[in-house]
Length: 168
Image (cartoon, rainbow, N blue to C red; front, side):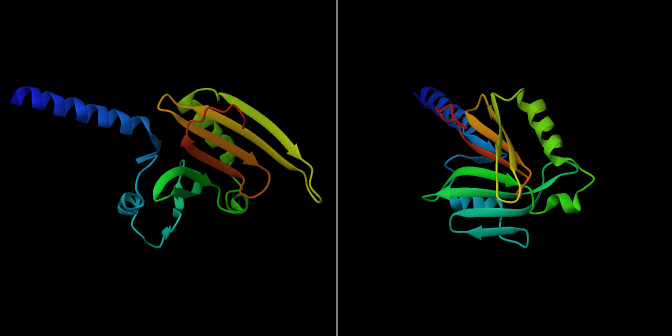
């Protein structure tokens, strides 16, 4: 009886671990993670801001040459998405680095060719907004959306649970 109970416990733990691994949105933050657990991972400091609906990391090193702001977003106290954006005006201080291209290449190397891509040009009153959008769907069930723009923020990476819609 004790052996059966131990095996059942191990199977339950494996299923729980597999479920947790499948729902990882970004790094060690799964969809549905409690606000208090994310606070423990990222305690408030000069570079980490806690707000009621989000926890922000001001300076996150995306690649060796590219930095971004991370926003972990919550609904009803649970993680729903993670966004990484270029710091406002990042081209001004990273003018020697093409972070858009570097990030696109890094995501493509890690996840393969995007499942979908779309290029949009939206006419504006003073300047045309040019956007490119790429979407990857991971085997773990995470949508990764990269939006590149000629306006601030110049790039945004969004991690959410995979959706069933095909629209960008």
